[in-house]
Image (cartoon, rainbow, N blue to C red):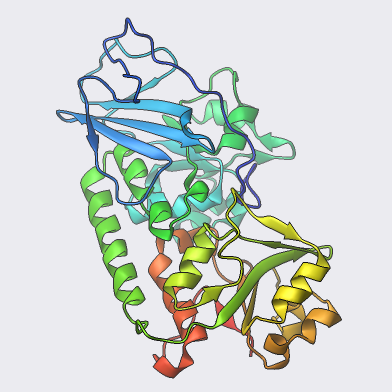
Length: 376
C-alpha cells in the first residue's frame, strides 16, 4: 500500500525542469548529459542511468516519458558543488532511506539493504518478516497519516533519500526539511522485465549497482527460460482479465504489463488490439460480448476469504453464466494472500509460470502457484 498509489496508477506528472546551460553538467536537445556516458538498459523506459568515471547519474521520468523529467540525481564519490539547479547531489554511501510505499520495499530487500529503511508509509502492511519485526519494535517508523505522509515524522527521520511516487512527491513538494526525493514510476513500465529493471535505479542510489545488475540479469534469464516452456505452435486460449468495482469492469490495454504476461504465457488476450495509456472501463454490453469468446476469465481482487467462481465473476450472475466460468476456467490474483503489487514485480518469471500452468495444464509442471491461482 502507499500514501498515493493504491491502484498503481499514474496520477500526477511532475513538471519538466531544464538544466541550466551555464552549468558544468549540460544537456543537449536530445537529452544527453554532456561529458557523461549513458548506460544501457534492456527494457525500462522511465529512468536513465549515466556514468562518468565512478560517478553515476539517475534521471527519472513520469507518464510523459523523457519530456516529463521528475528528478535528476548525481551519485558521487567526491562532493561536487557544481551541479544543475533542481537536481540533487547524493553521496556514494546512502545508508538511511524512507519509502512512501510498501511496494518499494522489495527492491531494497533484494539488494540486501533492509537495515537502510528507516521509515515507510503504511509500515503495518509490510510483508517481509524482518521489516514487520522492526516496525513493531519502532526501529522502522510509520510515515503515513490520514491525509498522506506524516511530514513532521519524515523531517525528524534524517533520511538521506525518500523513495516516492509522482503523487506523493507532488503532495510534499516545497515541504521544509524534506530529504531529497527519488521519484519511482516502475508501475508505468509496460514490460514485466522493465518493471524489474528498476532494481538498477535503487542500486545506483544505494551504492549497489553491481549487485543490482547481477540480480536483474538472473531475473531476465529466468523469465526467458519460463517463456520458452510454451511450445511455439501451441493453441493460445482466449483470455479475459480485469478488475471490477461497483459493477464496472476495468481491463488493461493491449500494450500493458498484464497483456505482455498473458502473451508470453501462451494466452491470447482479448483486448490486445486496444492500445492505451492505462486501463479502460467497459460497459456491461462489451463485457458480455467479448466474454462469450473467453476460454479463461481472470480477475485481480483483495479478499480475505477463499475465492470462488462468483468472486471472479464480480458477483454478477450474467458473467457467472459465461462459458469460461461455467466451465470452471476462472483464475485470480488476490492481494490479500500474495504481494502481487510488491514482491511480484521482482518475480515476473514466477508470475509467468503461474499463468503458463493455468493456460497450459497439459504441461503438468506440478508446481504450486504463487501469485495467480486457478479457482478450485
